[in-house]
Length: 317
Ligand code: XMP
Image (cartoon, rainbow, N blue to C red; front, top):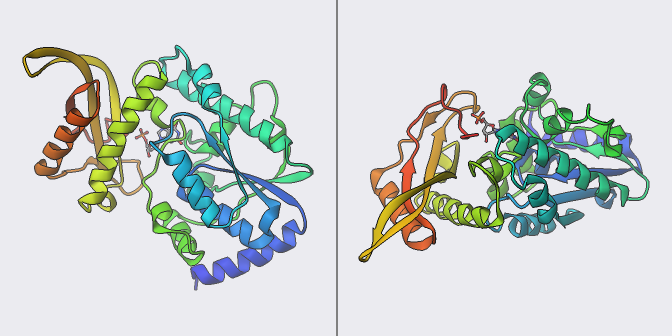
């Protein structure tokens, strides 16, 4: 019978045998899979696992510092790389969703390749690939797939020539979480909603500017914190906010305003392939809407997305 304890014991033993004194580089995303893979490999080879966590400028509010801190608490040898400006430069003026995805994927590869070169004698690339990623190898989701869709352009980056170690590639998501619990990874990491690799860049419709990112980060944080406070976070599969390329008229005191509109999206789902909009309590939505409009400068209207997938995707881009 499969248990997470026996999986951890067997996998750590195999990794020790396979990797010996070799060095491994692994990109952390803040998500469940890469975190569990990192802690597992770290348990086998300790400091020879070099983790890299990139700030691409389109993460959630305070996510870079917060997640980096929890990785350090877990004992991981992790380097945080602030590459915000590089990503903003690559994204400047782009409005097409696929163009934004490509720019982020390519920039990530450039940054990661540069960082991997700084690790002397590294010979393996660690990845948090799980079984559904293996069977859906044509999928465009996830960092490894993002890499796949670009590596036919101009030859492979050097880190892609490394040997690959993917200790979770036989597991389903719930098994990955169980393994994470056995490894003592905090629920705050294991219970996180999925978050797309291109981050807030595909939740800001139109072009990306640091100012828009700042507004969306504030809105998103109020929404997510509210869900947590009201015990709703674990009841939805994914939630977030979208900054619309629309301004609307409002009144404030006796002045007319003409400001931004944000949409809130929360869905229930099993695997993200189909999803229903989450029937959040009206009371909650009313409070969050007030909080956002009162606290986030530049936003005067909040709407709630009541579309299910299909046909509406979870993300707007
Ligand atoms: P959609 O919008 O297709 O999203 O219903 C399904 C799930 O996939 C995530 N998603 C992405 N994840 N890179 C990612 O790593 C992407 O380009 C991407 N697009 C969508 C989305 O957040 C949801 O969990």
